[in-house]
Length: 506
Image 1 (spheres, rainbow, N blue to C red):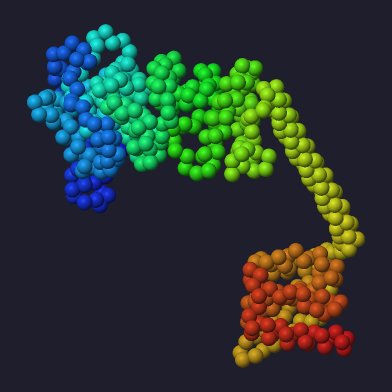
Image 2 (image 1 turned 90 degrees about the horizontal axis):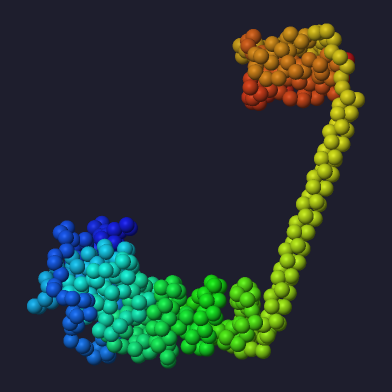
């Protein structure tokens, strides 16, 4: 179940998915809860500022974290989520559910796309105050500033870092980063420290918060206006500050994609642990050596080190290869020299590859030229041979017969073999049987071939080419160059034996 594109808060229901009737009804309920209200927002309660709205009674931190952990199953169960949202919207003695729902949609419309009703309603069980109790400042110039105010009003018994508010700009999905930051906002707003929340929720959701991380995160989160990038950028800056880096180090790390990793994510395997150790060592190295580098040089060094790490691993870890990368003991000057050396090596490799490609192209072109010359020579040789063996010019339209005409009557059928001795007769034979007999005028006139026509009861059936000098039948073809039938083959064989006897006996 996801919000439809372009309509925040409107949830798409697949009625053809074959789900149970109760699940379908729950999805319909969610659609009704998250859909924009048809009527305008009712007048807000008479309060001077949003901070005057009284929060609900506090609950123990452990209970809050336990509810957050259990909320994962509710978040992606349509029936359970619909019931939880309906219960949160209906507060005894407070505004009605419809009033609260309209207030949520009104805030999201006014926040310039920085809030999504589905996100706020999905975490409705953790609201500290009713939505209708929020009164935005009258002199608010920037609509985007409304988002953090609404998030603090709904979830904040304690101040929530401004950088976590953008997490509520889209509907939550299990496993995405936005849902993680939403849980952070709920935990911090309820008074739970990130370290304690990490110990309680981390094994379930795959994150942790090291000691002193929260103070750095809150400080960096307050700089969202100056350093945009959302919760992940703030987390990277906070961890950089926690392990000894400064603002310049964090900015340089964020400038290289490889180093933009979530420092609070639990490493899933040895490779992730190695990358985390490499990242921490990079922060320490930049903190001590970074002042000797310009930003472009630092970016080149970081990119070179990341490439080396991916190739050989980080020295001192089990997953590292022989000669693994190490930051310790490496000077800025030495790192730049290694970067230049690597750049020169890559440039030399590229040049060598281009040279190999050039040589390969030259060899291919040379072979192609040799092949073309060989083909030309072969064509000239064949042409010369044809000129040497070319038949003499044919007699003008007629040549002497060979005397092998024959007629055979069998079972009422009259078979006749007639030699074609004129150009006109050959052309007519080719047209009658639709083959190329007409092209043999030259060979017949030169005495190289003799062409006979076999007729059956006067109708042409076959054309036969025979070599006069050897008496060998070269080819026998019927209409459209078809082969002879078995009966025709027998007749041709009888005629051919007769021809051979005549040749032998003169």
